[in-house]
Image 1: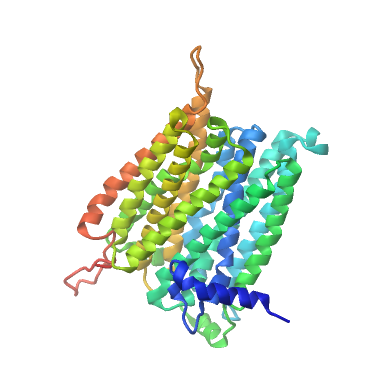
Image 2: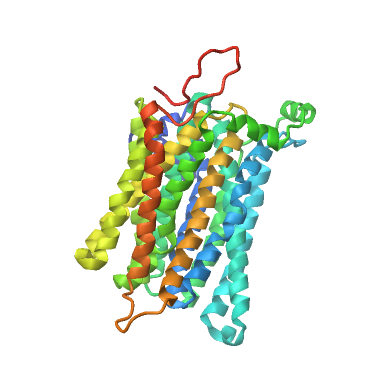
Length: 480
C-alpha cells in the first residue's frame, strides 16, 4: 500500500527550495517535510482568522444586521489574551515536565480552546439569525455566546501560534531560526488563501445552515491538523527532564528586563504597534465596505481575503530575498509602511469612480505592505533576543502586534458606527463615507510609523545590543 502522505510531503520538500521562501531551512537532521508538517498548526490559525475576520464579520454586519461596533468589539475580544503572549512564550521556555516536554502541552491546550470556541459559535449564530426554533431566543444570548466563542478561539490561536513558532525554532540551528519562523508565516498565508477560497466556494449560496456546517467542519479539521502537526515533533527525553527539574526558576520580570535592555527595543515595539494599527483597522471593515459600497456578494468578499493574503505572501517573499542578501529589516519595514499608504488611497478612490479594480489593487498593495512590514519587524525582534529566550521574543512581538490589531479593529467599528449615528443633513450620509474616514485614519498611523522608522533606518537599524561596561562599543543587531 502506498503511503500517500509521505509521497505528498516528499514532493513538497522537493519543489520547496525553488518556490517557497525560507524553504532552504531544511537540513539532514530536520528535513523540510518535517517542518512542513509542523506548519499545519499555522494552517489552522489561518482558517480561524479568515472565518472570524473575513466571513463572520461580513455576515454579522450585513446579513444579520449586528452593529459594526459590536462586531468589532467581538473580534477584539481575543486581545484580552494578546498581552499574555510574551508570558506564554516565557512559560514554554521554562516549563518543567517529567517527560522533558516544553512546547507540546501548551499547543494542545490552545487546540482545545479553539475547538471549544468553534463548538459554541454555531448556536450563537442560530440565535442571531433567528433560524428555526431559535427565533424566540433572547438576543443577548446570541451576543454573549458569540463573544465567548470569539474569546475562546482567539485565546487558542494566541497560544498555538506563539508556542508553535517557538517549537519550530527549537528544531533548527540558531542561525536558521529567523528563516524557519518566516517559513511558518508563509504557510499561515497559504492557509488563509486556501481556506478563503474554500469558504468562498462553500458559501456561494449563502444560508445560516450552510454557514454552521462550515464552522463545524472547521472545528474538526483544526483538531486533526494540529494533532498531525504535533506528532513526534518534540521527543520525550529523561536527561532533559532531569536538567529542567534542577534548573533555577527565573522570574518573568527578570527575563523581560533582559529583553528590553537592548537600546531601541521599546522604539521598535512602538513602530510595530503603529504599523499594525495602520494595516489592521481595515480587517473588520474591508469586506463590509465591499458589500455596501461596491455591492459585492458574500462569496466575493470572502475571496477578497485570499487576495489580501496573497499580497501579504508576495511581501513576505520579497522580504525574504532582500533580507537574505544583506538587506536591513529597518529599511524593508519602512518600505512596507510606504506601500500601504497608496493602497488605502486606492481603496478610498474605488467609491468615487475607481470601481472594483481600484479596490482590488488597493487590497493587494495593503497585503504586500503588511507582509514586508510584518516580516521585517519580526526579524528585527528575533535578532535582538537572547538565544535562550526565543519564545519570550516571539511572544513580545506577538503581544504588541495582536494587541494593536485587536484594538484597531474595535476602534474601526466604533468610529464607523459613531459617524453613522451623527445627525445628518437632508441629503443624508453616503454609505462609503464612514468607511473612508477609518481608512484615512489608517493612512495617518502609517505616516506616523514612517516618521519614527525613518531616522532608525538612516542610522542603520532598530535595535542595538546592550553591552557590559567593559566593552567599549555597541554593535547593531541588524545585519550590515
